[in-house]
Amino acid sequence: MPPTSRPLACWKSLLRSSRHQKATARSLTTYHHSKPASQTPITLPWNALNATPHVNRKIKTYPPPPSPAAKFKEPIKDLHEAQIAVLDPTGARSSLFSKSNPEAARVGDILLVRLKTGDPFAGVCINIRRRGVDTGILLRNELTRVGVEMWFKIYSPNVEGIEVVQRAAKRARRARLTYLRKPKHDMGSVQNIVLQYQRSRSAIQGGGQNDRRGNSRKKGKARR
Amino acid sequence: MIQLKTMMNCIDNSGAAIVECVKVLKMKRHAKIGDRVVVVVQKQRNFGPESGPGGSVSISNANKVRRGDMRHAVVVRTAKKLQRPDGSVVKFDDNACVLINKAGEPIGTRLNGVVGAELRKKNWSKILSLAPMHV
Figure 1 (cartoon, rainbow over the protein chains, first blue to last red):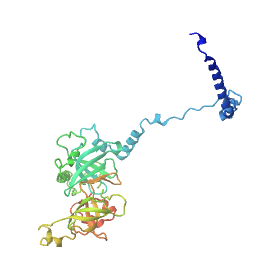
Figure 2: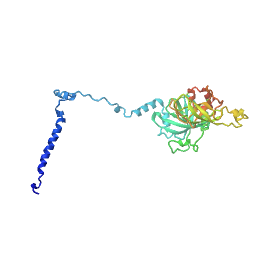
Figure 3: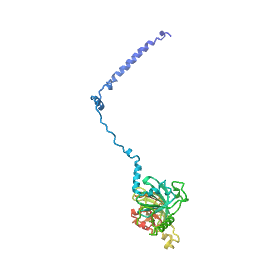
Figure 4: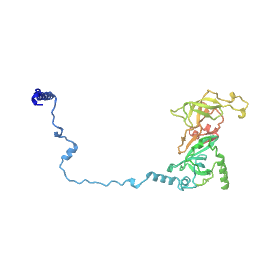
């Protein structure tokens, strides 16, 4: 198509220039020209430092202090061992509940815990919670036809000694015998078994004194 | 963990068998062994002919409290585990209490059942001496 066939094409450039003029005229009053930000001098601390003449001075460096983490690889383990060494110097309690000892007490055994204050407590061991120095045992018994459960910390200074009254007939196939709380499995009172054991122990030891209160001892220092 | 509406066994010979806690005294939380509570007698104990010297006495005479009576009581056993200062923990199979009067003396004259040794700490020595056993 020849260009002469577009008579209004001359208006296009005219309109464009007028539009541009209008835009500049509109922005003349409102547009504020400030200096670009990069040209204004900013006084910032690092700038001030850079402004000082650069001298090649040597910065003294110190080696880090020796890390205690390297010295004590397992601090909690060390602490537990140290505390067990204090609380159980003979190692009798540790061995009574250690997993490596085949003669160790297991769940299902009837244990007797002699206390420094108060009567001894006997019961079926239904849980052994091995936690280093916080190792505890859960004993269950029935006193005056009421089930009683007690946790004892085996390293507690209040615990004078722990005796195995009767071993479990079979190895328990559970770690925690909580099913012994159910009436179907409840062993009831083990008091007569414990009394029989205490009588037999006192007979073996020569019948020094009546051991109704469980003064017979298997390990630890003699009280009398 | 004795709180409002907890049903407890009453282990004395006051005549109440089962009581319900209606108020824990002097604290904002649940009652433990040795704490004082207000209870309502819900079930009376019916003493049979074998109930000792008062065998021929009728129920109304043998029972010092009746159903619906509101009394104070001391918690002596809880099924909630209770830790002692030496790290040992004691837990009973049931919740039990002993009825007392306003002065703190037990209403019954005999207790049947083991009680917690925390009563000594809370100065309930009269209840402890009545109890056949404490752990």
